[in-house]
Length: 219
Image 1: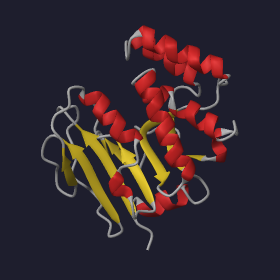
Image 2 (image 1 turned 45 degrees about the horizontal axis):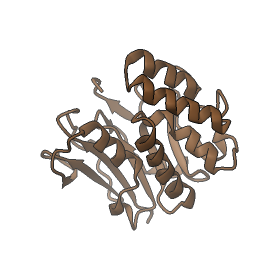
Image 3 (image 1 turned 120 degrees about the vertical axis):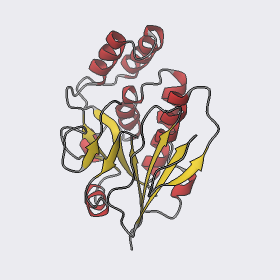
């Protein structure tokens, strides 16, 4: 039987975690947290980190060591929860791909993402400028595609997914905490500059308004 792991991280009360709505026999739920996990989740208690936002971001990026033995791992932000049986969907999404995610609901370009992050003060302008300069220097194209990283499915045994996780983390630690600035560039670098769709299944156009995941707002 194909087995899946759904995982999330909530530190510092940033999100109000939701109980598991649709438990499935071949899916486990894992929450990294500094508080009590709600019903249906297995908790991994961490001491409250100095930077809760960065700690949660790095948990997202890394395929957790607990994922060993699973066929796929699905990250969901703490503001989301599946409201339908998810395993058959994830298996279909990853049938011929290494990743699956929702498209960004406003734009298809990482450079636009950087522009908006600057305007909204999502990170320092210096860090975002450095990231943008690095992308331009690498030749990363405009309109390569942009994901909403609140939902991210990956094949656990995929060499590309494992290598991508390491490079993605490097970008975050070196340039900017905004993970959506570096996901697509990391994929582009590692896939021989192939089209994103060669390795990434687009689940749908909006991670916040769909029939698969309940979004409680406030993230």
